[in-house]
Image 1: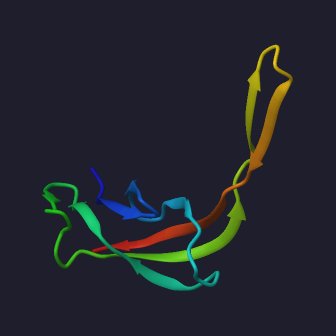
Image 2: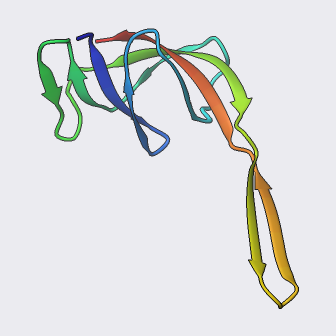
Amino acid sequence: MEAYAVIETGGKQYLVQENDKLNVELLDLEAGSQFKLAPVLALSDGKTLQVGTPAVKGAEVTTTVVEHIRGPKLISFKKKRRKGYTRRLGHRQELTVIKIDKIA
């Protein structure tokens, strides 16, 4: 089994391995910039698993921002029958594509 980590960003948790590409909530960083993600909730080197309480001390995941995109359009539609009430609302989430460079 390869090394992996469980990270948290944007209020969500992701299981990542090196060279993975991941769509996360919009980050205020330039495309092409490198940064370190914290907290790392769990870390495995392929043989042993370290689970943090709540985070693993000294663990960090280095990532690169690939691009900023917009997600698919989602439609919220409400209707009350026989009342003449309909409501339609569209939403597109702003996302950042990141690439996992190194897990340490």
